[in-house]
Amino acid sequence: MERTTDPGLRLMKNLPTILKMSPYYRPVVWGGRRLETALNKELPEGENIGESFEVSALPDMESVVESGPLAGQNVRELYAAYGGELAGKGVVSRYGEEFPLLIKLLDANDDLSIQVHPDDTYARQHKLGTFGKMEAWYVVRSDDGRLASGLRSGVDRIDLIDAIDRGKVEDVVEFYSVKEGDIVFLKPGSVHALCRGVMVYEVQQSSSLTFRLYDYNRPDTDGNPRQLHLNQALDVINFGEPAIIPAPVDTPTAVESEHFILEQFSSEDTEHDACGSFRCVTVISGSAELNAEDSSVALDLAETALIHANRTFSVTTSSDARYLISSVPV
Image 1: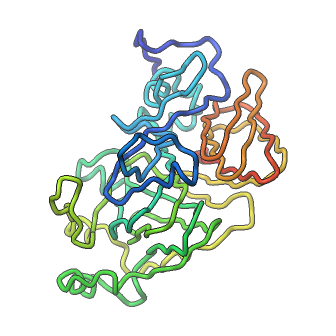
Image 2 (image 1 turned 180 degrees about the horizontal axis):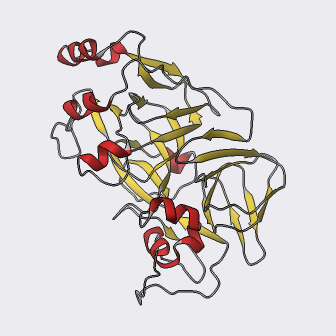
């Protein structure tokens, strides 16, 4: 990838190892205000916010550098300007000109639609974008909440179409109660839904492709019925694949997949060795200080930093801290 010559981007001779990020807040019909009340986010007034895009290169929904000499520059601009220096040469070789991951915090103030995502092949064949959507959730808060993961055993395409016709999609989906610390890995083709009272950290491919199967006959913010995508959903569902049951993972590596690695760490000082991928660090409990040879950043609850590839850094935490790191396998 060539570096941009865009004069609006202040290129630096030495890219800082640690970049503290400022999120994009997305208002949605199922959102609320708990990102503010529970996670101390400064939300825009008067809007129900469902998602905080912590590290995002999606057009018009980019996160930006919060402070320092690159303040105000968004992830897409940084990736175009610094390429492999920022993200890692292996990442750029694999994904080309599109930054591959999206990191979010979600507040389900109401049930999300029952939905499914396509894989890369389907997205490209149907000219819907470069990436499908593989994702993983880490449950940050749960007020006796639940989520949907997979179809019930034995449900096939005919059964699902019948349930759609009868308005009984919820009857053929598996629901699970969840608690803080539970993790669920959702491959493309998995039917799923985040439900009321649950807040999650999400790492996913950089895509907004979602095919809705059922949305409770709910109107959008303009009072119109929300669009369903039944034919596309039926095209991509992996019928017969077992549901992924949410559960905690005891090892530092919580999820290891084709497109991302999700790691979890608790309240102890930790040295993180150099890695061939960029890393996204998000504090989900307590606070932490990130230190590298050339930079130092303090992160409070629900704040995120983007770490330069091929650099070591250390994390010093408060006694109650937990933080997550997402990266690309290279």
